[in-house]
Image (cartoon, rainbow, N blue to C red; front, side):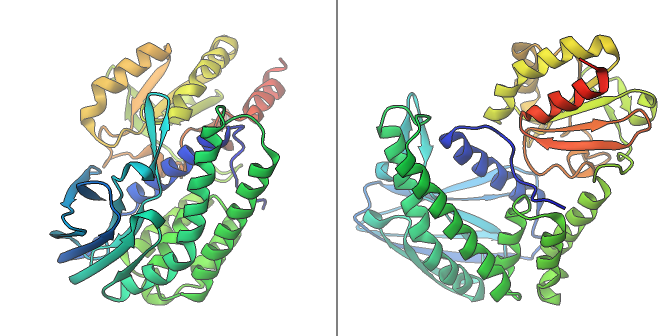
Length: 395
């Protein structure tokens, strides 16, 4: 079984955005289930050029709880109530920790740690962000050990990205920078892999592994997961990862596609049972996903070419909350998506198509044959989709 890596022909900065989207998806799919703990967070910052620093964590309903910690004379603190073991992200608001992109910005590297009962102390020099130290319980110690190796890589990668934008065109080839980016990526992979192998009893090792689902073949991923301690595998997060492995196995090419029954945007029930005898292409996307929106013109071309030949098109959007329905409907209209549209967030407890099809990144496309079996799943706007449809329909 080969490596399941991206086949997206994306430029340098889009790879960075996609990595952040992937990370958000991973965090969204895994809930902690730990008891609520009161965590006191103390910040000590040198040379920090902002009045606040943000922390954020995802609630059980999929939304983000964002808190600003006021920094005065290099000091700040906050006490929060969050599930123990919940992933928390520390985000610098210092202008030097972000990159201007035309009218927008690209946030710099953040620091991920965990809510723990008691006190957590985080210290850093903003001139060296994101290099920092964290003190606290066992989870914080794991984060400090891991981040001690990873932070210099993140810092170098961020600085390299800034240089790419400073040159005027981030898509312009630059052999020296490209080679350095590849070197940093390999070093990143090595650090993460070694931490997973050498810390089988760490919840952080499990989280790092889960974020690397697309880096390994399914067999390799399962082997690494099996090597974790019993307590980690039997944790709420561990059980969620085990379910992901089972779902991935069940959605391999040639396996029967998972049955689903879901309302489309007009309230019509769409069921896989009613589509037997037809080829079906399901596109998973979200309005928040820039690569998804960028792929829609090509998807419209495929629809215009192959729907008259009988290919059924279904779009499934994952928005994170139901309040995004109006935004979703507008995106459908703006992008000219005239075929079946489903919002996965609606009645998600009864039928979660993202989980059923083991979707690990957006956009993803799943092609199902007339017998209801999965032909293949592709990530991104892969040219392999076109090749397979040409093979099926002869043109």
